Image 1 (cartoon, rainbow, N blue to C red):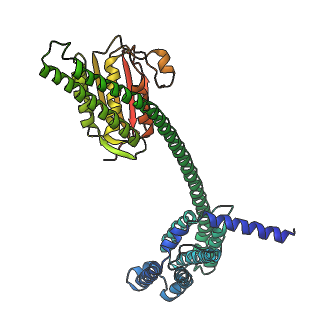
Image 2: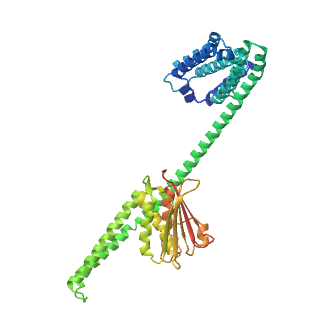
Image 3: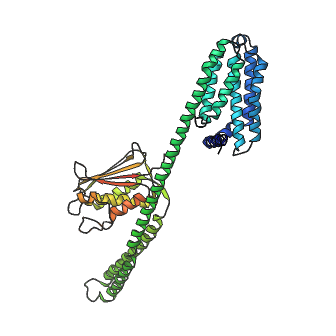
Length: 449
């Protein structure tokens, strides 16, 4: 490949990189017909004021017609670009060439103001020119690797210097030109690095979000399997209930002769037994239906205070010897799968475990503290008790189903709570505080208030 071909390929590739770095929506949003007509009118009025208003005329000493002619190329290119791209959502390669020429023409106009105005007004226009070129450098991602606009700026400054009105103006341009190019390159490079940082952060966020969703799906699947396994016992429970119902019927036939109760009293006992069995059967069916429905549901907003009050009231009658203290900061709302039913189940299981202790030694005091996490903004619920605490080997191992230290426990309470919390995007942590007892910390997504 010849040297000219290699140079051409290098320029083409650099131009493509520069185009990819641009934000076409931002450019199209700013370069509208209305915007250019407004700019044209504003520039015309300002030039007229600077040329003809007493005081301003002496300060700027700026000829109106030549200055307006210097603005004409930028206005024509900008308005033509806006007309060609009205209603369009994308830009072609030639669109970016128009952008380069139009931007360089606008910079040429700004530079001619500094070249033709009297001192010290020329310094004011020079400062404005530096501000505009720096903005263009950031907007169009000007770097050493893609310096197309910087070259246009250099050409604009050089052409404007040719019409300078004095040696003082040439001296000003000797500083203005390099400063403008360096400012463009600096802010363009900074903007490009910022774009890359944002892209990496977005990619990292997407990766973490995908991992969280994957973990939630696994937790939902694990919980589903566990619930299905538990609900699979429903058949055995139904068989046992049928046997109990049959036994109740037998009692109704045979019990009167072998019991000292009157027939009416004995019939009441049998009826109560049958009613109780029917209620148990209904509850089993309700548990099975709710369990299957709540696993795959979408997260719902749950007001925490009524749930905690209901849990405390329920367990206070069951454990009258345990003091259950409740402290809630604000009015938090958590988002959980299964809504109030799931939240009630989680809190009841965890507070119940705290009240029961290890089965041999129970707690005397349980404290529930709910608040918004200080930095993360999630809902934080602390359940602390003064019981025996968690065994050290349990803290070092993950929570497992059917694992418990209680003589008559099943291990499902803490395991089910942890599965439901993780399926809702939250976490459950356990620890033994240095003051004794056990501490369970929940973190759940919180509905913005």
